[in-house]
Image 1 (cartoon, rainbow, N blue to C red):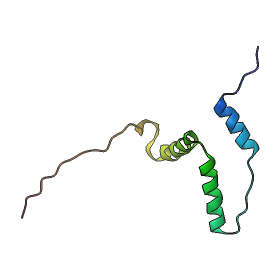
Image 2 (image 1 turned 30 degrees about the vertical axis):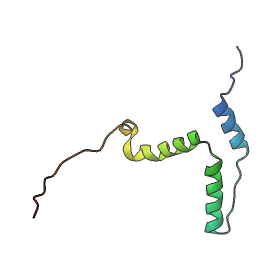
Image 3 (image 1 turned 120 degrees about the vertical axis):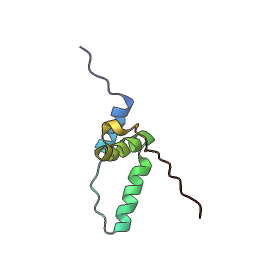
Image 4 (image 1 turned 30 degrees about the horizontal axis):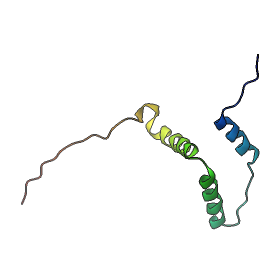
Length: 78
């Protein structure tokens, strides 16, 4: 049996985890700068995955393709 070879995404995730650090910010501005740097360095796929994790609790797994209800209301002109 051959050892499992990680995918490129898994390898990148492992490298990022190895580089995780705890940062203590002295101000909100410094914390904001750290957050922006983190997301700036993330790949577009990682950003979309994070967005999906935030969306799912509110709308559920099956609502990704849902559409808004449309309606028409006629208002008489005055």
